Length: 167
Image 1 (cartoon, rainbow, N blue to C red):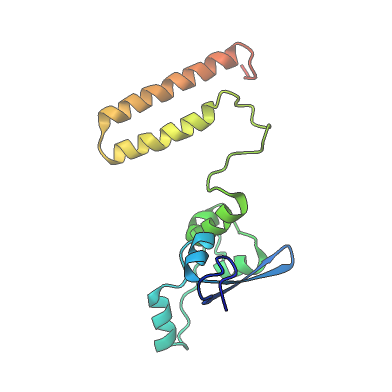
Image 2: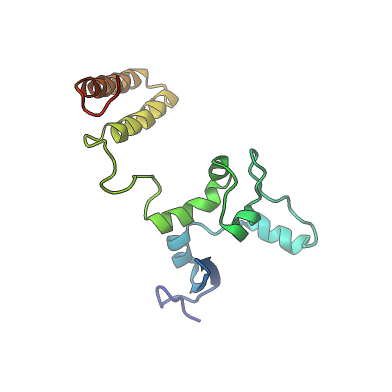
């Protein structure tokens, strides 16, 4: 059978997904699967383990905070706590990216009151600051820190002027 997406390569992966009670089935080549859903979930070690010792049950991945098992999430589509997003990040990110179109939360359209983009800019600077510190680029980190302070001061100034802030 040919890949349903590219219609060129042999489909070697059958992918089934239930969304809102509807079953969707895809027959894909490995390249199209990787483009759509990220890397293949099974590693060579998993495949070897299944061949060598199929009767041995591997420990199921669980959230260390609430104990929710990944198989439980697959069955119910519900996570147990915010830490589940970190525990199952590798499995969740391809689906989140496919559903939302991107990996970062951007909020609802026309609801964000941060018209100047202060919070988004601070978030970007925070990531840059952490990377600069990790790379021991302390002068760069100091410059970034000063930029963050300037943005915070500007935000406080706007709030004191009666621009939506509380005193």
